[in-house]
Length: 145
Picture 1 (tube, rainbow, N blue to C red):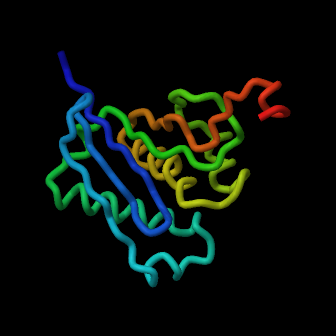
Picture 2: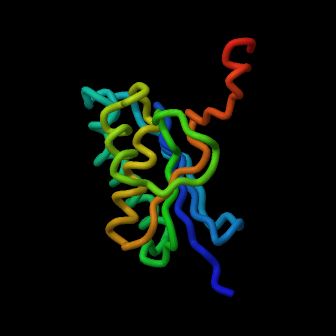
């Protein structure tokens, strides 16, 4: 049975964590630390997109990871509209919300955008899983807590 090789991307405010998995087995993982002057040169977080994508691709290349062997790319979900937990394929509406900071501007918004761009170039799927905006509260809990 063929293993699925998945690249996972988790952008944070001062670092980007990446991992490559063959099914559930970790093949490669790295926390890429960003110096303040690297990220502060960008007016908005979304403007860091190209910089972070290139850093990720460079790290994978330096580690000898052949991205053409990837089956899928998964990014941290970001501040989307509230949704239920689960796995979602990145789509145009989601990308629009992430780029425009629908629920706020945060580095996690870059996860789905970078995943989509890398996946698109490889003709594979881009996904997010359980984004930070997961909302599964019952209506009564919204009022009563």
